[in-house]
Length: 399
Image (cartoon, rainbow, N blue to C red; front, side, top):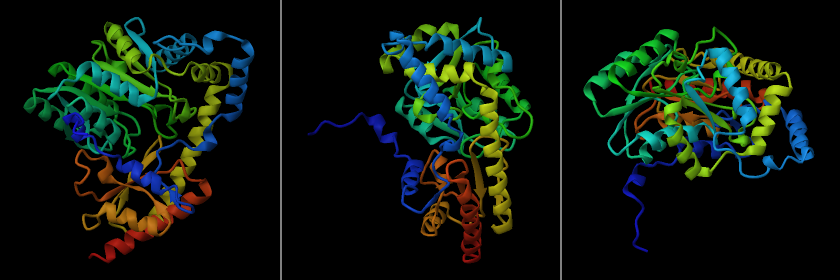
């Protein structure tokens, strides 16, 4: 067959994260690769209860095609929560249930991006979204990120020199892969820049409910009076990933576009899973459930941090997340992250090299992402010890 895929597919790259996550499936390996929430946080008994309840109600609406916007009681529960926590204005905004946060990114991209449009992204960042933007033939423009969030000075310079930019993508809290959180001033400056240069912000915030330390920071969307911020979050990280449920908050001006794009993508998200999620949010002590998950991750971060500091080379440093699922180990330039990762696998532990989160996945990298949520907690310290000791071998061997 001589038919060729569309040219844009040349920019779609296999996931480096998935490559190492699959390596983690080998028996006996300790995995810091998979970006999953801890299975011990899944509210299994609640899920059993509400699936059974759904079956016993005989409500056929739960088993047929559902509303494009989402299961109305869940939509209202999420609106109520977001309005109370962050002051989101649902006179001005809609809330759509989507099939995971990545679908929200895809829908926004489908509406706004044309070939050659620029998208400012944090670098490093979640590479699956790089692929989404590339699928719509956008040009990715990376700017750095640090402990205070996205580098707003670099963002402004990019906006001055690249008028083709249409959208700014940011993971505002407990960023994947760094674990960094944008401080309030960074969020304010980013929104001001978007207003000044007339750009859209796509705020990806799937880990926000998992803060276990520090003070909460309101989303950029809470500042939005012009309807230029699209806000997405997820129930995958706080209830169950296999539900594939996220939500998108957007100005009501864009309801028609989102309705049509959602319909042509998958018509609607899983109604039965939405019913179960609604039951967990409204008929149980949801805060207690979240607090148990937060405490689990707080313990894991403390364990990894303490173990790494005891065992890693003094030239290395680690990020200090206050929530979420990820942290990074930063090593000196003499260490190649891909080589380090393969040597880690030989010793029984798998991470993801930082190159997997760069626009150019072949670029040199000297950092690794560690997801501390997936491995059994009894393996977490042992895995961190292996990683720490490997830094000595890699660095001393190359000095």
